[in-house]
Image (cartoon, rainbow, N blue to C red; front, side, top):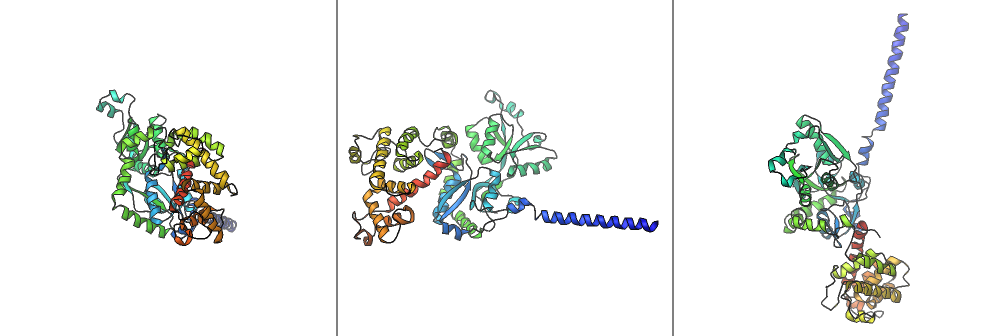
Amino acid sequence: MKQYILLLISLTLVILISCQSGQKQEQTQSTPESEEAVKMEPRVDIDLPEIRERDTLRAIMTYSSTSYFLYRGQPMGYEYELLKRLVDHLDLNLEVVIAEDMDNMFKMLNAGKGDIIAHGMTITQERKEKINFTHHHTVTHQALVQRKPDNWRQMKLHNIEKQLISDPIELIGKTVHVRENSSYYQRLQNLEEEIGGEIDIQTVSGELTTEDLIRKVVNKEIDYTVADYNIASINKTYNPILDIDVPVSFSQKTAWALRKNSQELLKEINSWISAMKQKTDYYVIYNKYFKNKKAYSRRIKSDLYSMESGKISQYDPFIKKHAKKLGWDWRIVSSLIYQESGFDPNAESWVGAQGLMQMMPRTAKELGYSSVSDPKISIEAGVKYLNKLENNYWQKIPDKRERQKFVMASYNVGAGHVADARRLTKKYGGDPNIWHGEVDEYLLKLANKKYYTDDVVKYGYCRGSEPYEYVKEIFERYEHYKKFTEG
């Protein structure tokens, strides 16, 4: 009997050990550091040489009143302006990639959808394990964002303070809304340990930006959130009902982020940041967006601030009307008008071009207009001239987008010079129906005697850099317009 019992015990132990071993093996197989950790590893091998080969730096950004937005037809923002200087330094083009969900920014970066996260990210140890940070741009601290009483203007200061949280310890039991993958969430968790009590930390969708949450506090949808002080401070300018005086962290550095395997790009950007910090321009840009509160208020209140209105200019209805007749996206026409006059109807060039679309008086008369000073007339006449150029000169170019580029270059420098560049392209074995990398290159060469005296050239010397940049900048701006407005 004893032998039977011992045998039973032995069998049971063998089965238990086998099960535990199987479970352990199963756990090892299903957790190669966890699925989430794998997603945070670089899945592409793209560094500065590959970026130079494609000629474009792709920057992951978010829409905000300080980072990236459209105002009076011009793309603007703290991160955006710094990026423009960076790509000029690198001699690259810039492509903005919008992160619709901020929680996915690291995944987008490591999947190769962008080369850099150009967003003020707080540097934390946890994040440093997933990505590389550049040298820091700013130093700030996290602040509690709360709402003053509705009648705060009629109240004495000490009575207002009584109704507000004045110390982080008072957050025990209070509900604070933040994004789960934000540094604010991590900080609130640490704060719970420090103050010895639980905070009701409610997480929100990554589609909501910090500014979205600040607006929710203003609109009484939530009571508290946390934000970097510089962001909270500039938002308080337009929403004085906010109180942002309670710090919830020590000073922290914010920086841009790169993949772990983009070491050459990191080295180059860090070198650029170190050099930029020696220049006044670097600090002027920061003050423009975080210190100039009057400009911020004026911008936010404007009908031409894209974050609120989705408009490009006050002339949108007239541009849409005439662009439709032309068969073009109205945003391309808008970008051309901005290039010509910056939407200033009183603009006049040194050669006498006038109005929104900077038409020469002689050209206007040929089209049947005695004056183009009226913005509506200027748009009508300018679009009519674009239509004439398209139909009379470039109708046979099969691709519509390519055809538009030839029309724009002709609008700037004249169809004759563009036709010369096209003939040169064909003569030297290029494709005369392709603008970028083909005809635009020969337009540049028309400043060289070897080319402007060529037998196929009929209109002689041309300063081709002007139409070259003209077309390039119009289409770059058009890409920004598409992000903020509907076609």
